[in-house]
Structures are given as structure tokens and as C-alpha cells.
Length: 199
Image (cartoon, rainbow, N blue to C red; front, side, top):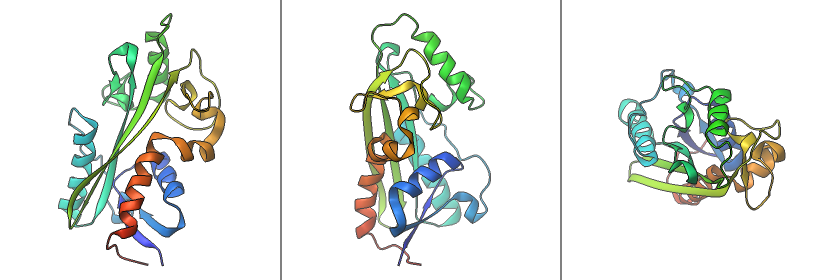
């Protein structure tokens, strides 16, 4: 029997990754499955705050145990930017992945320190309260895009442990070592013991 949990997102890429990482023991619902089609609130200035805000919105308005995530790319030479603004780095009103990547590469042009990290924070809200899970992967920003798999900044972020970008190694490798995978594994350990509905 599979345990059921709702992931508070409208991002198809994230949903696909989460389902792949959690595996067949869990039936992961999306917000579309509960007829929630609008933008979830994300007005906090921290990853933790945004993850909590999205999960709390679903829990309070739909009464469903759920989790939400927020992810930031934190670049050392840019003082931790884009950070909480990762998805809307180029334009504050929309997520344009090509423009985001181009802006990042432009701002790092000629910069020798290309150290960066991806950090994911997952907030789970259920009948027992709020729980936070964090995953971090460290790497560097490449000088140009490499690879065609993945999404977002995957073509320019190369984790130290593999020396290739996420876009070069593809989803199977990424889902084993990524920031989101590490946070989800912590979530999964909790969920295995949690009292969730089974299908």
C-alpha cells in the first residue's frame, strides 16, 4: 500500500523529481489534484519562510497534510545571490530560466571564485505541527552552459563530487545527489514513520 502526501507546487519539473526520489512507496499529489491552480504565496525573504508559507496556505485552506519546498542558488562571489530570488533572478515578475542563467554568467564573467551551493528547504505541515528538512550540494558555476538535460540552472552548476553539470549527467544521477534529493531523503525518513493515509 502506498502512502499519500501532497506536494504544494505547480512546478511540473519539481513534481517529477520529487515523485522519482520518493519512489513507489508514496503517492504524491500535486495542487492541481485538489483543484488549486493559482500561484502559491512566496513573499518571505528566506527559503525557510517561503517553504512554510506555501505549505501553510494549502494546509489552512484545504485541510490537507502537505509539504512545500523552496530552493536557492547561493553564489559566493555574489554574496549569496541569487538566493531567495533564484527563480526570478532576471525579472522580478516571472521565471525566465534562460534569462536567469544568462544574467548569472554575465555577472560572473572574469570572476575566478565560482564557488556556489544549491540549498533546498522542505517544510512539512501535518497534524503534528511543522517540520523542516534541508539539503545542500556544493559545486561551482561553469563559464558556459553544458549539457541538455535538466532545467533551470542545471547547465551551469557542476557539483564538486561529479565534476559535470546536472544537465550533463541527467535526472538519474541528479536525483541521487542533488540538494532536493538530500532534503527529500530526510523527509522520506520522517514520512515512513508518519501516520499517513494509504491507498
